[in-house]
Length: 202
Length: 178
Image (cartoon, rainbow over the protein chains, first blue to last red):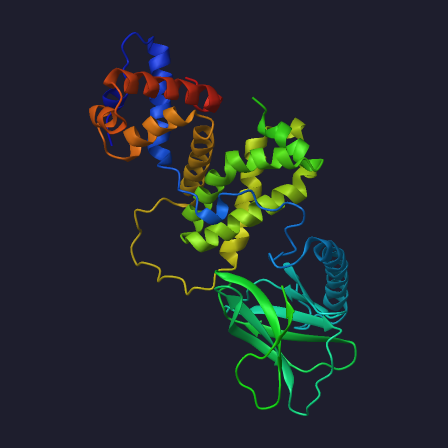
């Protein structure tokens, strides 16, 4: 680091002004260089409601509906969490930090409510789906996947079966969400191990 | 120049352009603060997102009569970063037997505030002045080398550097008054 006089031409400066500039110089030295912003931060984030995570595949009209429903769910989750926390306590309540709306064909839709990471590194999440057809086979089921690299199912979050119109299941996953570009729910026919057809997506 | 406080108050009414101005001014200082505290770029990026989400949500709670916008924004950022730090799951490093030379929490806090103010002020400089400051202070180049690098006369480098410091002195105000 250069000395003040190596950087600033002080010729003609009043002593008081030189002292001010020297103080700025000291602050610059103390502050160090500002960091380069990563590409992900070069654009202003969406400000509508940062609690709700919107992935790019959700069309605008559906997004508006989903946001409204998600906001309602958040309120219910908060109220439910409050009631649980004050009536039973225990592990069944968790605070919702993010809500990810999902959509599928017809009336099928879903929401992933994600809590904060716990002390051992797991992300508790609750998936609520509705409108998914009941499994046609005894050992068929659905799976929730994290997607990366162009919405390819990459990390399995959990498996579940639906019953009735609406089903809620809880998972806990240890994955880092960096690089994740969305979630999908796949239908898994009996005997299938690979990700099946996508029925819900973000 | 529109003050930070004005922008916060406009953001509170849903003014998207005011929010974008705040982001332009503070994205780098918030990221710098988060990096310093969290030591991880990925987590720091998350903290920046959370900070600006908090700013958008809570802008209406800003009270100009209690002080200018910068300290309020700093407090919001610090809270978001602390929340992110609490969520860390890595096993903490072993505590050394002997006292280290690392600054303690008060010094770190002061250092964070200084960097916050200076990096914020740098965002106000014209690009050509910010450029000479970065080269003069953090690239290790001498003034002659800066002139050569930018292909401009040495006198211009000196003029721009001095003008940049004078502008920073104006922006930093009380911080530099003697």
